[in-house]
Length: 354
Image (cartoon, rainbow, N blue to C red; front, side, top):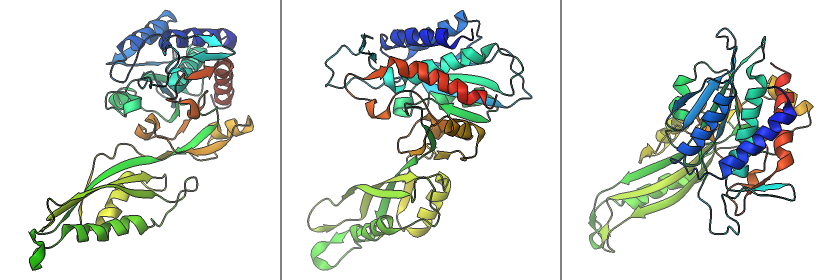
């Protein structure tokens, strides 16, 4: 099936069905069933682990490089501002309303359509691997991260998130650090003890002022913010410990591990990351896919939001129909024509390289 117009209709119908099925993170089994059934109806051999579905193109050739097409089918819960039924996929004035329509339903169904467009084509320069995944909205461990070992060697990734089909060529990573400064308890009136708050203040001042030597071309410097602090039990006791939390937005100039090492070299407190899995990502501006997009009038930019792109260790780009500004809003919607345009633009960009 390689008719883009027909695939656009298929994508729209699939999105309407997906909207009608609640699919909160960790509860995506019914949307996974739907995606699995649709792919199988089109002759695709599917693979499943929990609520993640993946497949390869019909004429997969292990000697060729592979492009990953990835988006997610979980949603956040509807907020209290909704005036519509979040699961009633109605179209009005060219807008398709419903929870997950924009984030990231439109991207998901568009990439499924693109996968079907190329599925039976022979003599492609690249393979395609489609991965429709769970738990993106909570950065969960049972989404894309769970199945990456099953996907085999990947050479380039397209992550579907609403970007107005502009090209997010870099994405910040995230580390949350729990820091503990150690002192010694004592009576405040007798000059006893070693005040952990004062020790923490010196480190906090370092977090506030330190500039990492390398800066990202897209994002500029790494940003570190101390966001929580706790110490002390009563007014006359010098505290033995002071804990504080640091939010670190890592750029593509460093790996998370490098940033953590530099921090530990400069502060006296204990530093424990809650995780280092949400990595910064980027792609070079002269990558053929980026150049194809720019040639079609698409803009490039650095994305301030985190997505499943942070779990990939390959060159990747975030691009998709819809607008990030509409994500998680009440009465969420996507323009119907954005889906058709998205499929067409994906195919036009990919046709330059495959």
